[in-house]
Image (cartoon, rainbow, N blue to C red; front, side, top):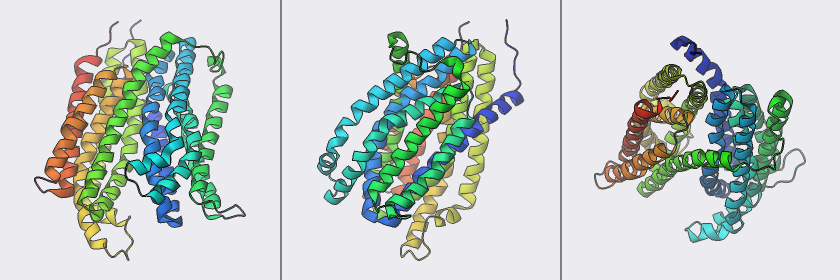
Length: 451
């Protein structure tokens, strides 16, 4: 039976309905990070520095493991479209297995976090506090990866409302626990950075419980935890082959931004602070593109399951147009009101306010270009993941970011003397190349479905 073709308006409504809870969930997750940064900054600058370096260490290992969870989305979406409940269960179960195995292994070095951080040149006092933080957060790795698997499973089945509300709940709960445990309020002991770590662990475990209970009660037909101990090497291999490249792609992109921050630090503290402000603003708007990309992955996965090439093409065009419209709006906002946006992050009494504004405004204007290419590359990645194409995109992303983007950033920033603006222009060129090559990959090859 030939699938009934959907109009572009129908695709847009479906992507909006599916994507909006994911977008809001991403924004809520971003709010958790901002809250932790602000509250630890209020408590102690050294504690903030320690949590920053510890968080970076955690993120680098976490982001690779997230790939196994994200691999669940296209595989479950395709299986659900074929009404194969058993395959849905097998894929999700193996996603959980791989996430737990990975999380247990990569956290072992954290027991020597202080020695590792000192060895790479971190201040001993900061390294000691970071070690304290990581000895608690170490127990968050596996639950956090389980959260990613469950969110991917639920998103693939288009149960996105629970993802939104569980993340909002975590965002609301987090500052209350922080307020009590960091500062010693409401009769709680003053625990400083330990309190922040306990808060992070608590909200992660709470989120796991909410998602698991929802799944057991609302989706009993999948019997998700039936024979949870039973391995399935064939399905595990598929999840691994799709998931590992996703994780390494995310690591390549995250590593590029981390490296750009290091190079910005070579210019000076003002440039680094302005870079941090611009990254926060770009990261905030990027949450919207990630939500659209996640929705595109689900829609592409379902089209693949139906072997519906016209729907895959129309859905891909619609998702890209929706993301591009948002990118144009935010680009206009960045160009028209750069000083007002940067001012939101700077204390009026800050002695270096004028210098920060000058550098920050120039970076925000470059970030307007950033919006367009970053949105397009993440949309292309989402569509490719939907059709289970992840290995070549990983190679494309790594080449674009590390072989092209970062070297150009260095050349523009230092030998050619463009400073921070040059560094950001290099990032834009790397992301633009990734956007072009990934889009060509999707439209030129992966968009074809064998019937």
